[in-house]
Image 1 (cartoon, rainbow, N blue to C red):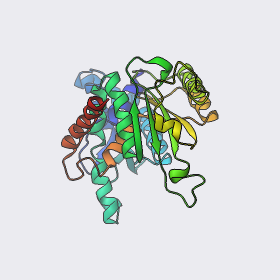
Image 2 (cartoon, rainbow, N blue to C red):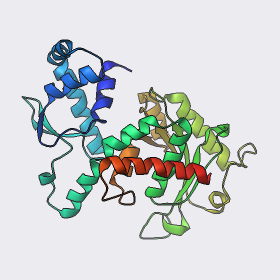
Image 3 (cartoon, rainbow, N blue to C red):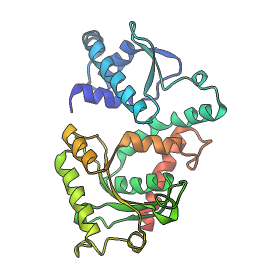
Length: 286
């Protein structure tokens, strides 16, 4: 992972203080904590690289907002590189929006918990997120790794007709999760495409993994590939062409942070610990 990627990852994991912040100061801190530089070297690094890292953080924040996530920061002055980390409360006028932002402050805490999860716990985490997203059925597959499938879920989404939503056509999800330190490449997307095809064709080596409720439903089957560290550009292209949903740990953390079902009125650190408990509860049940 490059220095830029390591720093960008760090920005998502720090609970910055409220109010307007100077990006150069934050970058200097990051250079010490992430890159292991002494204060003098960190200051020099910040001066030399502030523009490059600032642009990377802004681009990531804009990308998040485009995908429906809360932006990492709200720029207040482009020229002096000043910003507010997560929009300040006054930015939202409706009480519901303000409560949503307060929950969102747990995101950094949740991401740090996700960092500590084992591969198996990460698989269970996807079941937790699927439940919070509206799944009425979830199933975590055995830890053998056979078939490249980690879990199944069924989501009955609301709609104006029964044709494309509700109990008539629930979304049937086949999930594969990868808690890698590097971005997921093309081969893992192709592996999931093959697994989806084998499930749909009732391949004998996978039938023991497929839950009865999955077979009994008649809705569309979609793939969901979750990566702790994101995806290579080629993987994104293939996934788009095959209708596969891609998510990173930041996506998962936002769902978990914004959920009103996980300690809505607790402090961010307690809410993060409740996420870990939810994961372990899934493992006990499976």
